Length: 101
Picture 1 (cartoon, rainbow, N blue to C red):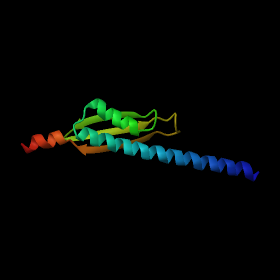
Picture 2: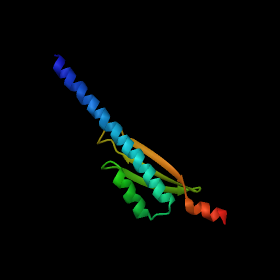
Picture 3: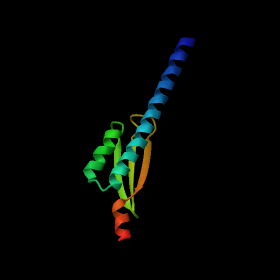
Picture 4: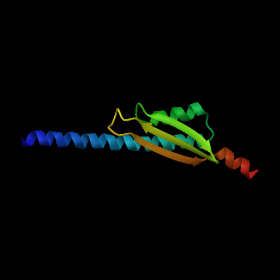
């Protein structure tokens, strides 16, 4: 009776570690994408950098508004029972240069 409970507990702990690692990868990917977008890299380069860092199957969106670049990375629920999402924002360097001149 104890062995199946221990196996189940070990499985839950392993799943929790995988979810935490995927969340960290989402945060890192969003930050990398926001930095790339803030440096005025092309949209394709921003998506490439973000998708390289993100977990497989992640959705990436990039928006620019009010002088900021926002990158959102979302892992849909089929991979986990709940969706993972991370966002990062960076000041758009092009907007900063235009305001300074």
